[in-house]
Length: 141
Image (cartoon, rainbow, N blue to C red):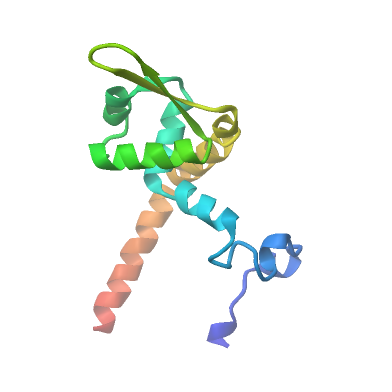
């Protein structure tokens, strides 16, 4: 049946706490709220850049091409609230603010780099799949 497609891994994967009611598939799960922040493209790019070292706001904005000042501020605030980024304000004129990863944020770096590496390694396949999908959909019209 077309609606009953499963991957080979789905039959061998062990059930975790996330698979049970109340897990990450439940919108009230606190872990799901964290995933919402981390699955954002800007959060991934910011964590990846801060893995290299501490950056000031303007440096970070230049380093993450395409991010608006408002989005950078909002994403940094979310990451700081989640304990992944530390904001250090210096009492100077004009004010100097630096951002760096906390130890908790640092523990995420390998996963973020793995995701970015996967995207770079598979970009050609994904673009080809998109093109084929778009062609099929144009033909179906």
